[in-house]
Amino acid sequence: MNVVISKTPQELGRAAAKHIAGKLREAIAQRGEARLALSTGMSQFETIAALIQEDVDWSKVTMFHLDEYVNLPESHPASFRGYLKERFTSKVPLKKAYFVDGEGDVQANIRELNRLIGEAPVDVGVIGIGENAHIAFNDPPADFARQDAYFVATLDERCRNQQVGEGWFATFDDVPKEAITMSVAQIMRCRTIVSSVPHAVKADAVRATLESPDITAAVPATKLREHPDWTLYLDEASASLLTKPTK
Image (cartoon, rainbow, N blue to C red; front, side, top):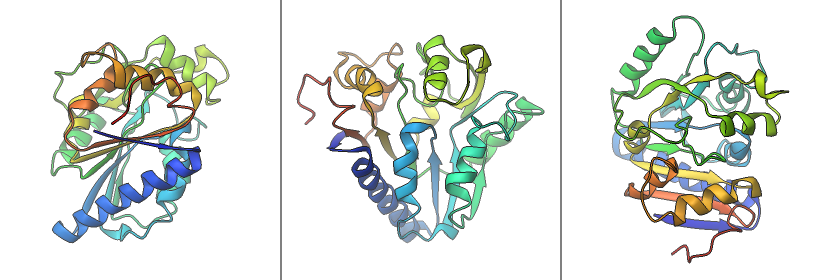
C-alpha cells in the first residue's frame, strides 16, 4: 500500500493519471494491449480529465466500468454510461469499451460482462471510495466471498444520500435502490489498483479505510489494504482526519 497526499484535487488527479498511464504503457509494452476498469462519480473528475491528456496508445486499451443503476436510462444525468461517454470514451480512441447496462435483460447483461471481463486480467483498476467506504457499489457489509465479477446490489441509505449530495438526483426517493456493480473479488483481481479520493466529504471514509484495526466488511475499502499493488491518492481535505502516519 502506498498513500500519496496532494494539496488539491487537481494535483491529485494529475498524479493519479500519471500513475495509471504508466501502468497502461507497461502492459502495452509487455503484452501489446491493456485492460482498464474505470470508476465514476464526482471524485473522479480531475483524474479522468488528466488521464485523457496522458501519452497512451489508447487504440490498445480496453475499458470496463464498475457499475450502473438498474433501470436508469443512459440519458439521465446520473447515468454512469453517459458520464464515461461524455468525459472519457468520446475523448480517446479506445480499442473497446464495455459498459454496464442496467436496462433490458439485466441478468443477460451481467452474464455477458462476466464473460468478457473473465477473458483476461484487468491491468489497472481505478477504484474510488464512497462516503460509506464502499468500493464500486459494494455497500457495507460487503460480500468479500462473492466471486462473480458483476451482480445486482441493493444500495444502502448513506450511498443513496451521497448521490443526492453530489447533485446527481433531486431527492433521495429519485435514487434507484439497485445497481449492477463489480464485485470486491473482481476488483481485487486487478493487477494494479489506483484510488483517487479527494474532498472533505470522504475524510471519514479515508480514516476508516486506513485506520480500522481489521479488514472488515463493515468498511469495504479496507479490503484494498490486502492488495499487493494499491496506491491511494488523497488531497489535504480527504486526509484531514488521519491520525496515524500513512507510511
